[in-house]
Length: 221
Image (cartoon, rainbow, N blue to C red; front, side, top):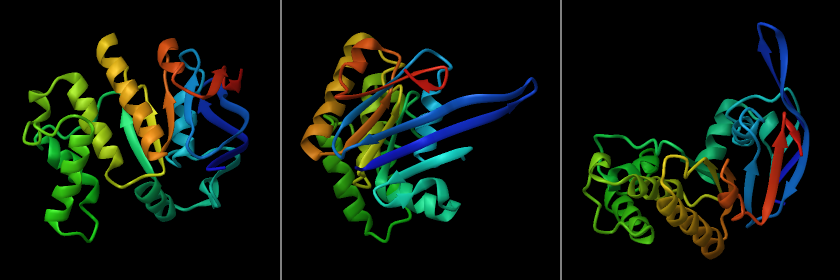
């Protein structure tokens, strides 16, 4: 199993008292699955995704990535874990507006001991993979929404992650562009064997998952 979650609970302090954002969540995900996380607004989807990345502290339970205990790790270990194993794709693309497409893709390699020519080569290959080989020098504002999300996907792949965490990756796209992005993610999942966990509110997008997690009021439904 690439990811194992046991009795995960997350509580938030609210002025009205404690809020149970996640309640006794348990599941195991084999390597190479395309996982969709669905549920109504406020059901805990993004909280679960952030917990799996070690970006928020859980209240109790266990989260393991292979043999690495995410819930027990300190900030330095979690940072290294994400750098080596996780790619992120967000709803708003999160591109740096004054950097070109290829510079945005290269960005995660900034702290790597690697020649700039090698960074450029790897980023170029990924832009070709996502169909943007002729858009390397374009700024985000010069790209369509779908093209911006493709740049974001290429950036998520630059560290050769074992897992991609995608939070509503088609949320800002029209249906046609959404289909393109979903098909691209599925091809990456199949061709590269990368495990994908995708939060979505879109029933059609949810059908892309071969492993489905449904949440309701913070619990598995």
